[in-house]
Amino acid sequence: MLKNLSNYLFLMTLVSGTLISISSNSWLGAWIGLEINLLSFIPLMIDTNNLMSTEASLKYFLTQALASAIFLFSSILFILQLNLFSAFYFNPNFITLVILSSLLLKSGAAPFHFWFPGVMEGLNWWNNLILMTWQKIAPLMISSYCLNFNFIFNIIILSIIIGSLGGLNQTSLRKLMAFSSINHLGWMLAAMNYSEMLWLSYFLIYSYLSFTIIFIFNLFKFFHMNQLFSLFNQSPLIKFSLFTSLLSLGGLPPFLGFLPKWMVIQSISNMSSIFMLMIMVMFTLITLFFYMRMTYSAFMLNYLETNWNYKNLIISKKMNWTLILNFFSSMSLTLISLFYLFL
Image (cartoon, rainbow, N blue to C red; front, side, top):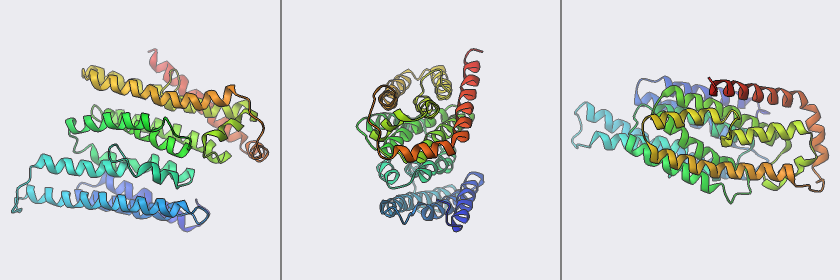
């Protein structure tokens, strides 16, 4: 992604666009930051060696441009309503819902998720990581300024259900990670209803786990489920690093990913939202099922050595120290979460 030096410039403006959005004190300032962020990410998405990246970048641009237009229009309408200059009266709650919908479209929450798996499928792993983590910061932060509980309640339920069921029949790892991201977005929105620090903690842990998984997927050029079976012939350290991260992302105790889910469950139970809590826990077990399906297959089944294995073994020796660092950081964070649980 960063072979071309101009990509460093686009990466800097990508970061600055997000910072402008989250630090702005007006809707128009937030829109400007979102546009800078969008126009910086498009060149990073295009890969001359991958024909699907052009289609993915066009799909991403059209969707984000539509969301930006709705956001700008509704923001201007909201400002006019407040200043009493509008000849037409709109209910402020309706305008808030339109703003919120445009931001959820930008972040890829259900039922506005139609573009997300397709765009993920056409990108390389590092662009997928940016799309799953960094690109969600600005829309989610702005969404927290105009939350409507009844509307967000429906979005949370839909995101968790679609994110869980959508990943069941997937063999593409990129689409599977996309539906996983939709599911986790539902948990982040639920955390946002109760505390800003709670959703930020969830987001940071989710970003760390996603980085660990995508680092290994990119290292071995894994894009489909059957390629994971080649890990049978790899070192135990690589398998353990990947699969602890996968099970942690699914929220299996006592791994690190269970800690933010546990805090969200505790917050929701304190607010007596039992129905939402039941839906969230039940459908998150489905996501844990397809993570465990990946891990169980690679651990338990013996497959013949494939053609790409020799190359991967050479790469793994070069990256040995990075994997060891990844492994120990995951384990140390898991131990910290265990200590927190038993306080």
